[in-house]
Image (cartoon, rainbow, N blue to C red; front, side):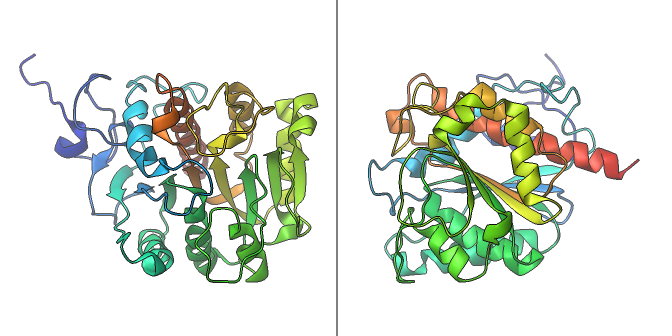
Amino acid sequence: MVGKRTDNAITATTLTGASEDPTYAGVTSFMRRKLTKQIDDANVIVWGIPLDVTVTNRPGARFGPQAIRRASAIFDNDPQYPFSIDLFEEMAVIDYGDCALDLGRPWEIEQAIEQQATHLIEGGAFLLSLGGDHYVTWPLLKAHAEQYGPLALIQFDAHQDTWPDDGERIDHGSFITRAVRDGIIDPASSIQIGIRTIAPEDYGIEILFGDDIEEMSAASIADAISGRVGSAPCYVTFDIDCLDPAYAPGTGTPVSGGPSSAKMLSVIRRLGVLDIKGADVVEVSPPYDHADITAIAGSTIAMYMLGLQAERLANEGR
């Protein structure tokens, strides 16, 4: 069609508004947002962190950001369910691309992620990060705590990630230990949802185990989260292995007995009352995925986080 503009990721002339790209073609960015390093006018920045050097089981999460972006193209230009609004009518969202990492110098990874994240959020934009393995949440938490103070953590996960840490390990299973020890998160207002493994410590963090949430409604899970977090500034991290492997086979450490994607999405939908300062979706590992099941789940979770931000901005503008 004459005059039709495609490849919105690079040809967009504004940070708001829908794209005209087909779901099956075009330059890939998260939900067709403009790929740019110009962050001044952005309300939300989507950022990939393609890291999987810290996994204790199956690698492959370095391909997670790429897969989540590809799967996000399925979201067309209509108002997104269940928000019933065009998420980008007023909310300026960019895709900043990926974190610059030198995997040949692993001792620099933590500082590299933290410094780049700090640059992205210091102007007040909401940072939505796409992992990568769960280690990336540690430097992300540090950057957000520097900006907003100690945080309540909402962790959707099959694992507590509270294994011993000597302060030097690069490990996706011990970042909670560091965050509690260093005062980055407040255990008294933090909560973990979907845990189906046993770790040596809980540090006073409230846990909703897999058996618990199987018996609870989405509304009651959301109420438990809101009751725990209250008005504290909070950070949401969603390890895709929170979901049962039936809904997320493409992950490094799958654990049976988890919730459905529908139930957890319904929980997230109810978290708009919270003061969410940042979020990530991690541990999507495409080599173990089938038909993009896991990538689609990860991209939908990320889209829901954008939906909550769009509603918040709309409410603030009233």
